[in-house]
Length: 498
Image (cartoon, rainbow, N blue to C red; front, side, top):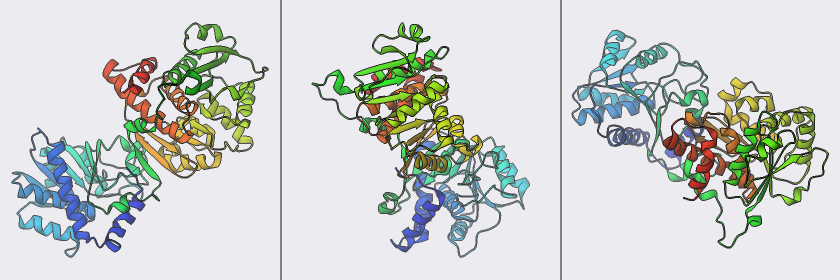
């Protein structure tokens, strides 16, 4: 499914009217009716309704809320009220016409801030609050009196359902801006990028996409660069393995990882790769850490790494460099050597920091052959962008770095961004706090590297890896609750067998 900025969604709305002759009234009516149907069918399944409050701004989000309020009244909801946020919509506007219907049905309509005491009383008694105060067109932070209303809603004990986006969330949202904390978000037509900004995602609750009925050619436009990546995407990305295959045909990965004190990273990344359908994995580890790692591994071949030795990259179909590797000048020179060769692979963890040193002298062209897997701090060191900027605008910064380095970037987090040099990007909604554990990233790096060594393109391997990693993380929660990174490893092959 495509994912869009607020600007692109506005263009889709406009083109629906100008190119496909969709009346504005039809779009608004369909959005409200279908959103209401989703509430009744999915959210309220088996739940008591109680008192309802619908918050309506003067724009289309407010119009959607008014349609939903009308539907509630028609279905004989016993206690509901509408709050007009920031004044009445114009009588000749679509929201204005929806308001006239609500008033004709006898729905109490209160004004904010004029009747703030009455509104607060309604909110204090509400079981469900529907947020149609402000939409994605917001610029900067929400201001009074609307921000005061959002504060009052957040203090309400009722469940909150945001219409399209929680009010205050938009493309320019930054941590600390006033914003409604929703339990559910009903986003219209297509998912919006702003919902998956790291600081915004926690305010959205469960996100549901409402099929409003926009023309399919607009929703499926190949010019839209963004995709919402499903956790099940790995199923279609993994190429079939012939029944008569043998180990050398299934790929051979070289892993450069581990040093004294960080041997766990080497074990995790190499073992995860071996569990990801590869035929052969060879781990090169520092000589002083070799005895520790070698005794833990049986199916992975382990060799002491010597920077002075020659290395035949032609024997391997992929490379992983960086997990727990260390930051010595020898490692930096070895990474430069790998980059100069016609190899494909993954750079992770310490390898990202080493690459940042290399790039500070002259930005290398990685030839589209590498996947970089930084967390926000490592991305900041790689690019020089402040960490807070990375969290505030991860898609743009990932795309810029991907194009500059000519590499695929998988920026890790509870919402992971995968950016390609072509300008395409994918967002995976991970939202699994149990994956935030030491070593989880090493496992991810191993899975992605296995995909490359097994014959996938770097972009397919990145998408395969992040979606499989998320799937395995969910399975691990069911098996172990709060798990350790090593608990993920055996579940990789179990998941792939499905």
